[in-house]
Amino acid sequence: MEIRTIFDFDELNRIYASTQGSEYDMQKLLEASYMLGLYFTYENLMGREPDEDEIDDLLDLQLLNDTVWKETAGKNFAQRLQEYKDIEESNDENGQDADQERPKKGSTGPNSRSTANESSGQEPENGVSPEIRRLLETEYHRIFDTSCHDTAEAIEKVTGKKVFKTWQTQKDDRVRDSHVYLQGQTVPLESDFYTYDNKHAKYPS
Picture (spheres, rainbow, N blue to C red):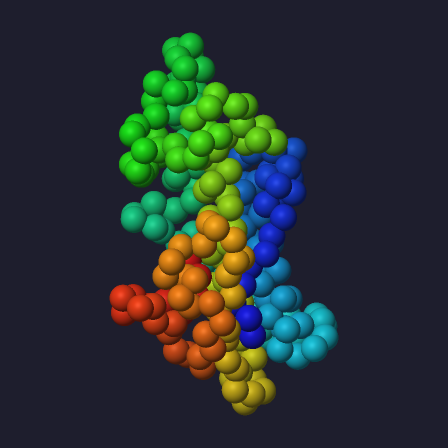
């Protein structure tokens, strides 16, 4: 199984922008990411699409829910989304330029902005602010990768088939050095990938 996520993020953001842009809309997209990971992994390992009974056997709804609502640094996606919306609403009410809310490069948190396009005064892409766009893409990617791993574990248990995973990057200039180092590495499903500085992870995060 290749540990790799390839999405058309422009399309993902278009879908989000075409809805009400609410917590519910993002939740549904993140749940869809988990299901996409399930289908992708099953096809990758079994060579065909799963039928409904196989999906029922593989899908753990509690695991899906826990993955979608997992907290990072004490906050889940909905709390982060609300923070970004509150900042936008406050800026609109005060007639304040969003640039005034931007901290220095390298900062993190709901006020952070971090690309050349974002600081150039360009309009949000597809009607989605840079912060919310980044939140959606990051969470979608995380949930897909988690689903791939969960599904592979379930298939391994059901079939007894030993599963290995291979780290694949996008192979562009945005890939961090530690991930370039991992490119092409193959390990058993239950094992971690280890970088040159001894950091490790079960899959991209």
